[in-house]
Structure formats: structure tokens, C-alpha cells
Image (cartoon, rainbow, N blue to C red):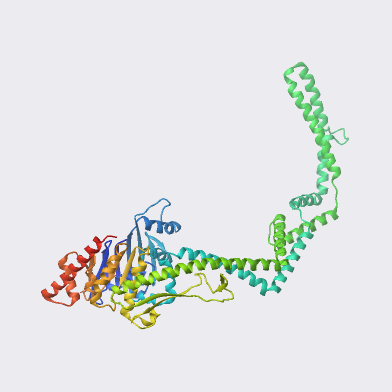
Length: 588
């Protein structure tokens, strides 16, 4: 529910704060006082277009802000969006949400905020669509456009979820058909691709790559490149350990063996040195083994320039392949080759693949046909039901002779169409149906499109009738109507007021009106007037919270002066109250 609306420096509104009730809110006042400006501000707030002209002359910015109270259903609808945008904590269950929109005159920029956090206008619109449905003075024109009719009926019939599923299947079919088109129309490109893949697979296979071989080759290259130095160092180590026949330098192993002999004598005298003797024995044995190992290493070292060149060439080949195929390791090269080979197999078997794709295409077309047929049947039933209910509403609005029908058509014998029984029907992501609302306003006249037969007043009443019927399936909590009474006379103003008031059983409803009969049904009544202060015009809104002020406003709307006018206004107000009481008391 919209609890509070705050407007600053917007058009001729300098500063305005409005508190709304849960039921039916009505705004009245003289032409040009700013009634519709309030609706314009609300429309901009929930993501509508901004205009520099909205900024009040002499001000640097215009600002609109609203606070919405959230019930459990609204929280369930809004929280996933708010959480996605990190506008609420994970476990938070807010009772309110605040929108604001600001236009800066200096930069012609608008700033949107939700709960004080700057957001995009697109997000504000996404959230606003959950909360508010605004019908401006020309909004009924959208109901005259055939492309809007399908969405209206599907929403009424609760088909949007099923239609979304159909759209996913159609999307899958489009992917299949795109692949078929590529296979059929671009054979030369596919053959070029196959040749390239074949060359790549053969090139990588010819290299006979082995995972991990780069490290092994680099180690061998380092040994060969430094073989002379390695031989010198190994021989030096071996000489120190084992001796080189020069009696002047005692070998390490000989000295260690002498140490072991001395410790053997000591341990015979002092048993506590037995472990030290054993250690000396182990060390001398290990040093002998180390010396023999170093010696063998020195003997095995070779200086082989040919093998070094071979290794360098091998490493360069691997480096070139990795650079060419934009990978980092041999494992990546082998994976690339495997993937290319798999694609190559698919291309070499493109005829078989094409046949499989055609079978999948036909199967998908039959699936689309099944879904579309189910949707079509629901639309036919819902269309008949919608037509009956709209005609009933129009009779209440003094359009007793009006015929209204939902005409559903489809195109058969489409060679690319989906299958239903033994026929093929043209389709898109919404199904097989072309749909339009048709009407005949006078007896004997044929059904024709709404846009061709509805006058201004008639289209307003048709819009109200449709909204009345559709709103019962509409979950949008706030409905705003700007001068819905356009083209409607006072004779049926009370009927319109009653119907708008009845919508407030399921919605918070706001209406801008010139009709006193309609305004008399308000649960909360606001009067808008212009005031000139310091040679500046501004809008002033007064809450008419008692019978005297309401009667005075209704009398002024009637154009009746004096006590007679007030008596007429009071009768209108009392009649509306009586009708509301009767409707409330009616069962169901």
C-alpha cells in the first residue's frame, strides 16, 4: 500500500505531502490546479520517463518520494529483487520500502533510490511494476492496440507461466534450426573447418607428445650443456671421498674408517661408547657407497652435442605448438587435440548429424504443437468468459447494446509450422494464436476492432470494464486512474464510482476525477487548488475529512450554488454511502 507521497519543486507543486488510505482515494479540483501532475510525479517515481520541464521554475531540482507498506504477499514478490541487488540483508523482513526520484536541472540527470541507495531507473521500474499500475488519461489507448490483447487475456487466464515454458521450447527449436541452417547452407565453410581441424589433429599427433616430458628434457639439456663442469666437480668430490693415489691427501673414507677403529677400542673399555662406534661404522660405510655412486656418475657423464641439439629442437617444437594453440602445457595440447578430433568426427558425419537434427526438430515441433494447442483451448474458454463479463460490465455503464468478443485466429498450412494433429500451424513464442478484442456498439453493426468503433467516452468505459474484469486476476496492489471519467457524463458517474470503489476490496485505488457522482464514493477525498503567493503559482492539496467540506466540494463540482446545490451534493454523498453499505452487506 502507498502510505505517503512527498513531492518537492515538481512542475507547479512547491512542496506537498499526501497520506493515503487503504481504500478508494479520490482527487478533485479545478482544471489546471495540478491533479494530473500528482499522477505524473507518481509515474516518474516508479521508473517512468523524466523531463527537465518537471523541475519547478527557479529550483535546482525536483524530487518525488514515496513510502510503501509491505504485506506478506508483497514481501514475497519484492524480496528476491531487493536481495539480488543487495538492498536488504539476507534474513531481513522489511515492513516498508521507500522509492525516490530526483531530477537535477543543472545536469538534466535523474537519480533513483530505493531505501536511500542509488539504483538504476530500470530497477525502479521493475520494482514499480510489482507495486503500481497507472492508467493515465490516454492509457486506455493501449487497450485499443491488438498486440496488447494477447497479454491481457493470458494474464486473465493465468497462462503466463505456461506461455513462458512454451517460449523456452521455441528458443530451443530456434537453436536447432540455426544449426540445421548452418549445415545446409554453409557446406564450404564446414569443409574448410574440417580441413583445418584435420591438420591440427595430425600436427599434434605427429609430435608424439608425452605428459611431463618437458621437465625431463629440460633436465637432460641442463646436464648435457654443463657436462664438462659436472665431470670436473664429480671427480673432485670423488677424490675427496675416495682419494686419488696421492699419499699427501688422506681420503675421507680412510679417515672415517680410522675413526671407527679408534672408537671400537674405546667402546671395549667404555661400553657407553658402543652406539658412537656403531654410528662411525655406518658413516664410513655410507661414505664408501657415496663415493662409489659419485664415481659412477662421473663415469656416465658424456659430452654429446648432437643429443643436445636434438633436445633443443624438441623443446622448440613443443614451445611452438603451445604458442600456436594458445595453451600452457602438453596436457592442454592433448586436450585441444581430443576436442578438435571430436568436432572433426561430428563434421565428417554431418549428414548423419543433420538427419538427427531434423528428427529432433520434428519432435520439438510436435511438442510445441501440444503446448500451443493446450494454450489455445484455455484461451478460447477464457475469451468467452472474459467477453461475457465485459458485456455485463458495459451494460452497467449504459452500453446495453454493445457486443464484445475475443476473436482468436490462427494460420494453417504453414510449411515451417508446428504439428497439431495432421495440420501445421504458424507459431511464435506465444503460441499459434492471433488475438484481437472486437466490438459492436450498436445493434445490427458487425464486430469491428476496438480502435475503429470506440468513441472517446466509449473507450474509457471499455477500459474500465476490462480493468474491472482483469483486476480480479491482477495482483498489482495499487491502481491509479487519471480522469477515467473522460467522455463519461454525470448520468453514469455513480456507476463508475461504485465500480472503482469495488476494486478497492482487493486493491488500493486512486482516481483523479471531475465527476461529483464518482467522487462521492471516495473513502478519502482530496481537493487540489492553485494559490498565488509572491506572484508564484503553487498547488495546494486539502484533505476533505468531514461532510461539510466534502459537500461543499461536490456542490462546486455540480456547478450548483447556494443551499440547493449543497442539498443536491449531500443527496449524492448519502446515496453513495447507502450503496456502499448495501454492497458491503451483500453476501460474497
